[in-house]
Image 1 (cartoon, rainbow, N blue to C red):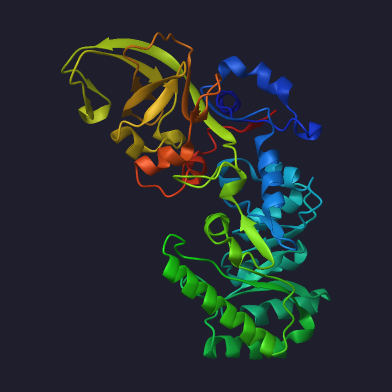
Image 2 (image 1 turned 135 degrees about the horizontal axis):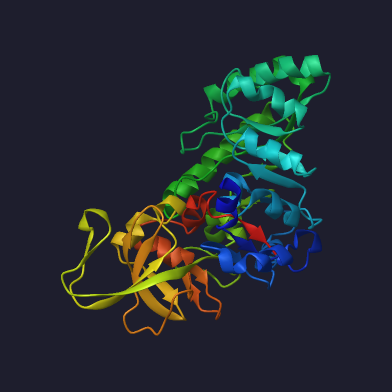
Amino acid sequence: MFIHFLLSLRLFFDYTSHSRLNFSTRGELYANNHRKLVFAHRDGYIEKNIASILLSLPEGVELIPVLKNDAFGLGMAPVAKLCAEFSEISTMATAQIGEAVLLRRAGIEHEILVMGGCPDFLNPLVLEYGLTLAVGRPGLLTSLAYLSKAAGKRVKIEIKIETGLHRIGFMPGAELDEFIREVRRNFDDVEICGVFSHFADTKDRPRTVRQYDEFMKGVAQLRAAGLVLPRAHICSSAAYEDFREYSLDAVRIGRRLYMDAPGSGNGEIVEAASFRSYITNLRRLRKGDTLSYNREYFCDRDCLSATVGVGYGDGLNEALVKAKAPVLVRGMTARLMGCCMDQCQIDVTGIECEIGDEVTFFGRDSFGNLLSSQKIALIVGGNEGCGLTSALNSRVQRIYR
C-alpha cells in the first residue's frame, strides 16, 4: 500500500547531457499514474544556468552551489552530481550537517561547507565525513579541536562574521578578538578554509553597504592577527544579482541555479522546474454553491470547476488559493478556487478541458507557456519562488529523466 502510494506521486527532472541521471524509462512507465509532478525540462536548463553563472563570474571568483533543503526541494543528490560535472566547481554548501552527510553517502567528494549552526553532539560527523564547518560561536572551535586531536587530523572550518543577520557569527571587535585567541590555543588542530557572512536585505542598499563594510572590517581584523584566509565570501543569489562588486573570492548560489531574480530578471537564467498535476473531475456549479471544508469558497456566478489531485498536504500554498492565483490549463489561465489536504479546485470556465488534462501551478506547461514561480510567489508576498519548490514535500516524488 505504501509503495503504491509513493509511485502515484512523481516529480520529473531532465538532464540530457548526463546519462547517469537519465531515468526516462521509469518516467514513461509511470507517466499516466502520476497525480503530481514537478518537471525540469529536457533542454538541460539547470546545466545552462550553471554555465551562465560561471560565465558571468569575475575572474578568480569561485561558484559555490548551495544545496540546502534538498536543493530547494528539487533533489539535493542529483543536483550535486550535476554540479560535480563542472570542473570549475570545487566546493558545495549545505545548511546542516545531516545534508552534508547525505551528499557524502551519495558519492560527492567535493569540499562541502556546512553554513548553519551545529550542536556539539554532531561534531564527530564533521571529521568522520571530512566536512568544512562554519564556526560562529565561542567554544565550538575548542570542541572540534579536541576531536581533531583524537582523530589525528585537522578539522576544516570557515569563520562566520556577524554583520547584521544575527544568527551565528562573531562581531568584529572584542568578540572576534576573543575568537582569535581561541584559534591560537588550538591552531595546530585547525585548518581555516575561509571566512564569510550573509546579507539581511539586499533591497536595502544602505544597510547592505554597511554590512559589507562590517564584514571587511572583520576580515581585516583576522588578517591583522596573522590568520590566513584562503577565501572570503558574502554574496548569495540575490546579492550577486544586485551587488556583483561584492563578489570577493566566491559567491554562494542556490535559488539562481533554478530561477531568475524576483520581479525583473536579466534573462540570463531559465526557469528549471514546473509543478504539475492533472484534472480528476469536472463539475458545473451554480451561483451560490460553495467549495471546500467550512464552505471556504463561494461561487458568485455559474462556473465550471475542475478538481485537481494536489492539496496543501503536498505543499500547495493555501495563501495562493485564497488569492485565487493563476494556473495553466491547455495554455490558458485558470484560477484556484478551493483547497483541501489532497485536492484542490480551479475555475476552468471557458476552457475546453477534460479529465486527465494537465494543470501547471508554476513553471512551463507541456506547450512551453511559462507561469513564473517568482511571479506566483509575489502574489502572496513571498520574496522568492524557491519558497514554493521548498514547500513541496516527499509525497511529490522527484523523478529525473
